[in-house]
Image (tube, rainbow, N blue to C red; front, side, top):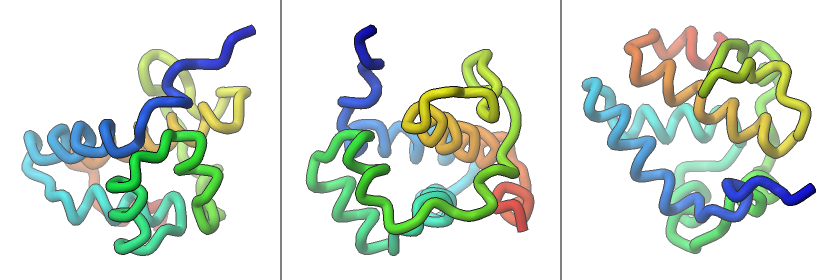
Length: 116
């Protein structure tokens, strides 16, 4: 079975789409960054380096310092798929990120997005 093409997509090409989606709904780039750093453990500087260096999603998540321990609390549907039921670990991480950005764009409180 061939792997999903999103795995080899450059994170830096998708990141601006996350920011645009959030900004259209009145959120900020800083909030998008906060959500991503919460999920992955990257610092702001490390995140910007990953955006600029052209790494793919596989590398982005492989090099992430530490997935947040509360990641299991992320539940819901993204693109018709329940994120907690995704079997491929990399795809699940990507779906977690999509879900967090969706929640941000929908106006959910940051404390709830970050499962505080």
